[in-house]
Length: 348
Ligand code: TLP
Image 1: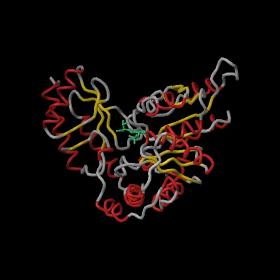
Image 2: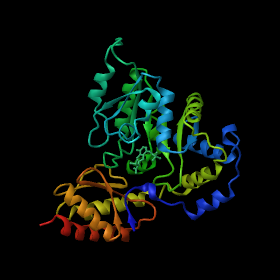
Image 3: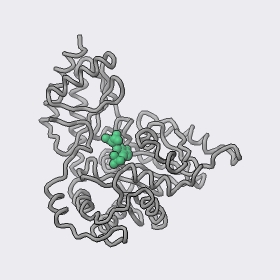
Image 4: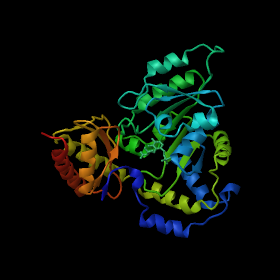
């Protein structure tokens, strides 16, 4: 199978499994797991923050960060297409009483800064929930994996700062963004008080994400992690894979981007498939297909028959994600399969 549903389907490498088998471990709830401690130091260093906290998932990283930033009833401004708003089960609202306040996302993953400014200019009136946080996402998943430019991050964070609000970055795929922008995770994170990133997407780890920020903030997030049931014991077993990932899996993300560009070009030539354009493409290709849900379902089934899996992105839209284990030859096969599936399902 050529599985393009997500980069979360990546399997740990042999070097990761070896490191996991040998990992020195302790009880991380006591702060005594040397491998977790090493990973946390590494992560903080890479993004230029004082401290970091290892958590099981990107969802928990964003949730613990939101809860640590916002009291109950405070507003968090975030994109209306933000993963945290759309895809994280409303956790910040359901569990933390956070008033998630969506701001329009532009096609490139940016926030509509005029709308954000308008929201932030509301007077401190008893009618309004008090503002607590501004959050962005980079790369932007629902905006077809677009990498959001430093200049926009700086402008959005500056708006937050002008209202004395903290800014958080959901940097689940921050290394993809850094590569696409010819920048660094550190530069992208510098605009924000806190940043989360994932080890279990393009970096190939079985589990794990990190929240990074000031020492004081990480102490708060630590309490939230415990509250959410994310305190793990001998977590060095999985943290060991994270260390290998940060050491060996970051630079190769450029291959995934090359493959995604080739896939976008190939799919773009097929009648009935409309690839959504992305200025700074990373490892995702989102495309719409002609016809309705019925034709789309037929297309997905025909692709699957030919050994290619893609993810659904709406009734007649799909997402294909390139990742470790997908080679250029797989992309060529996937394009041929898509052309055949399209001819069967909706072209002509
Ligand atoms: N994204 C997953 C699905 O949930 C859609 C994927 O396959 O892309 N932030 C961003 C930007 C994400 O894309 C994801 C996962 C998360 C947070 C949550 O991470 P996990 O799955 O580790 O909770």
